[in-house]
Image (cartoon, rainbow, N blue to C red; front, side, top):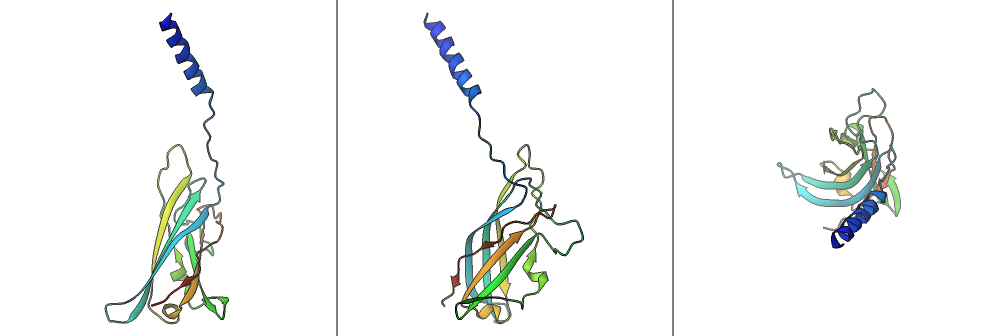
Length: 166
């Protein structure tokens, strides 16, 4: 009789496990970005010129995982755009001195993703400012936007306001 109870309990546990719906998250095909951290340091280059090193860290989710270098010839230069804004009398000003070749970077392809095509990744970008006025701001903010290979664009994520005190 005890063996029969064990078999019955085993079937009930198996039935319960098979009856459970495993929750899966369906992410949209458009990328989503969220700022995690910004580290700013003043330094000097090899010639003893003042520079500012900035490390941007953000989290990226893309539902279909098609992040990688853009293959189409478009107005978009690369797949990740970051912008620098500084504050002048509490007004956020876009830094237009930065060139397009600097503010566009490529996030490489993650390769084969397996059965779940969703891509979730921490992305780190390091920037070195060697020219004024970028290296002289003491209050500034960054924005990040990502494009996937289908040219779906992400939200625009903003860093916290950075107040740099030496």
